Length: 252
Image 1: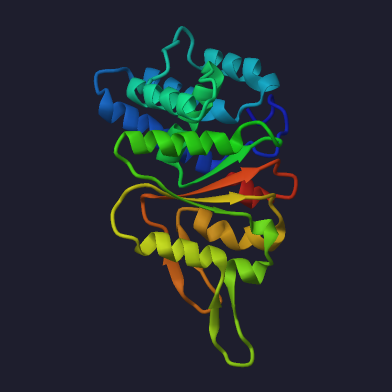
Image 2 (image 1 turned 90 degrees about the vertical axis):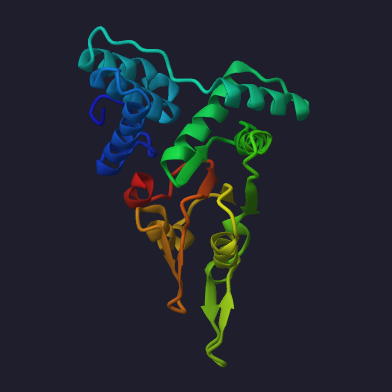
């Protein structure tokens, strides 16, 4: 994939991507123990990677899968109840539940089930915010009350984002993100809790997020406080592109 597909910034074919695919395949195997392992691996490779493949690479990617798994072509596993709820939410918002819009919302739900940090990428007006808002509303219809906190990291300074120690009084002042993360971590219940970071990436604030985005799920503040993300918490990044992201960030 790395050699044949385009050099898009958000592509990652390393160990983290492999681990995520194997987790999805393991879930498929537990749910459908009678199915062939090759069939389930093909489905997990296809369904987990398709959301991030750009249009020009789609034919090449599907051709690679066809070469690796000759004669295997299984339909996507679909949650009909979720899709129905998503369509209802589109109608409630006076939007058209077009097939592609519903598919992208379902794909976001599938990615959130596997990874605790996800990027929604696209230019303005491509429906990034609509995607997660509709999914949150659909979760509500299914009895999963989703708490959403929205924040623009570029609207404030890095110290206001994470927090800082006052050099005169040596007192700790919470940042907006650390306050939201702690609030979600300490909140009772296991219903979904999302923090939406709606703003372009830059090295000033994203590098300190790497330990939160990897398997540690841990934010260490300058005050030495450590905030751990709970299993029901998710970070969703709304981005235009990954132009200023490092490979370390993209792989997460």
